[in-house]
Image (cartoon, rainbow, N blue to C red; front, side, top):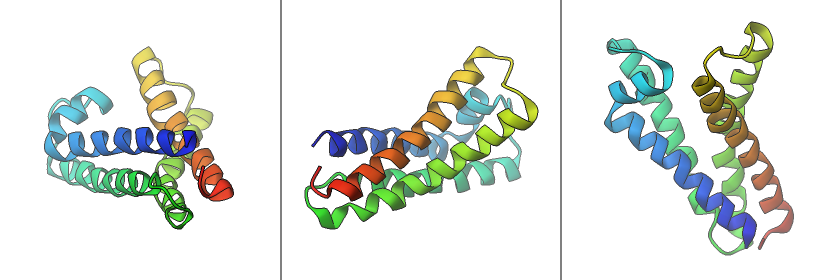
Length: 131
């Protein structure tokens, strides 16, 4: 039950981020990646990433349903955020930790920790079935 509840919360987190990216890409870019006026290609890229988060969020929400048959959806929902987290971890290892505290928190918690949490929760959901 706790695993399914946490998958629900994480799914809502990714869904919220996706909807923000898709509905207000300029605002998202200014707040998250510090692009004051994104150009067309950046807006397109933000929409692409937003769709990936939308799919992840929906799959995680679906995986929170009661029944072992929904457990594999947790893997589908956790895959993109976990891989995205590895990209950011690689950047930290190669280029150093960001200088701004806000960036450390956004990337550390919102990307890397959320990605790792999804992977752990997906593993637990598959392992326990009805958890």
